[in-house]
Length: 464
Image 1 (cartoon, rainbow, N blue to C red):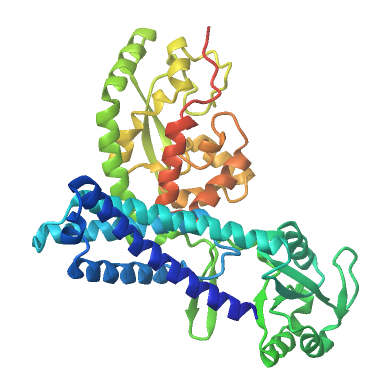
Image 2 (image 1 turned 180 degrees about the vertical axis):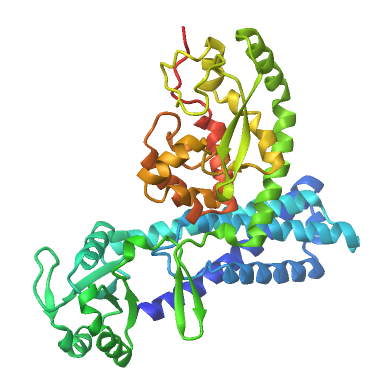
């Protein structure tokens, strides 16, 4: 029943997207030609059979692109931010391609304003529809509709954790009919029987999905469990007993008959995405250097007048693949002998008054834009640390060096959540690894916006 409903919902979703996209063209051209040019203009310049056929073809192509990027399917687990970001990207690329073709070929002189309005209307309408649809589905699932019935196999830690997580998220629409195991386990709900009875249990309950969460000593039952599920045509999901060691998006490689789970593969292992991120860094750094050059000049003068010593402070930091590089900052402290091993604090006596000010508003970090140009750093990524602390933290903090799989950044996921300066290293590592495993261009753009609108000012105390 769930599968039939999902197929129907996917078809309706595609049709609605197509209607909204094509309607956006009609609305954009009506505003551009009819309202701005006068009565009857839209029929001559926007709604001719030729243009309407082109708009219909473009609509089909855009919906096909949505389908190719897996935007039609179950929304139970899919991130809405990812979904909306992909829609904006596809729409932007689509309109850019059309504009480019019209400019290069000069097939027809079509209004660029109309194309821009079309992009805005089609994007906004599809986004609003998606947000409303997801909210509506979650509302009905909370009321008990569109539920997916599941049976859990096992009664160990992860079986219990799954049941608890599902109960805490009723909007996902999962109902646990019970669990199957050798023994009862308090707090897990109704026990339906033992492993040997699984086939009869599946016949009786007609579950949509079987969640297999066997413990290591129960792996001998796996073949029997899978055979029963296949016989009854029940979908199977497996929670491995090493669940805590698997990243958010694991990659499975195949060598002959052997499946390899790569637990440290990241989106930035893809060469294309590496090039895209590097280009964004390079262009972004050039633009930001041009925009902030007056501020950097003022900061340089302030540093020179605040205390004797160099304007730029160069310090060894550990970057991608554990390679050391020299990171640039405006000097905010008096010249001292502990610059490579001492971590600064709010009450640090080494800081100058002007240094406290530029640190408060992250102005001291601006020279790192030149590190970004050189390729030592990225605009967004885990903050680089000095070698002294890297050697210390890699022994004390689990997964610390996983951060070195990508270029360090001027700002990062941890920093925009307030984890900067003298804060928990464990928490920072947790946020950094989440960023690495879930990286996307849109996540970088989001972090840059969060930095610009609130993430640059920190808890640094300005010296009196």
